[in-house]
Image (tube, rainbow, N blue to C red; front, side, top):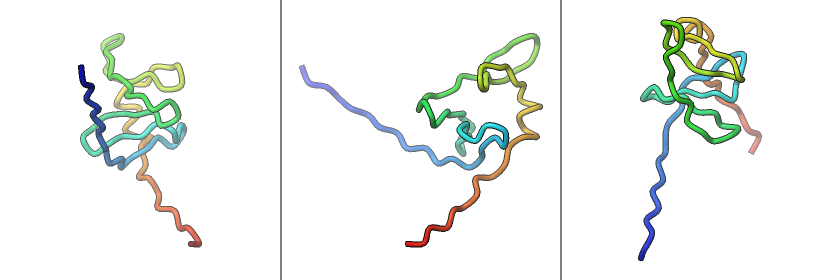
Length: 76
């Protein structure tokens, strides 16, 4: 029996300013780059949102906290 390996590359455009390890892709998915996991969008108490650092945050609150990922200049 043979195995198949599939790898997917995503382009990240935004991050949270209070938790910079959570990134959003151009297609709208949230990833934690520390653990390398996809963060699932959940429905809780009538709000749609994500669990960030073990605490629920709604989408309306998170949209105000998004920032573009700054470009870093390397000396080489």
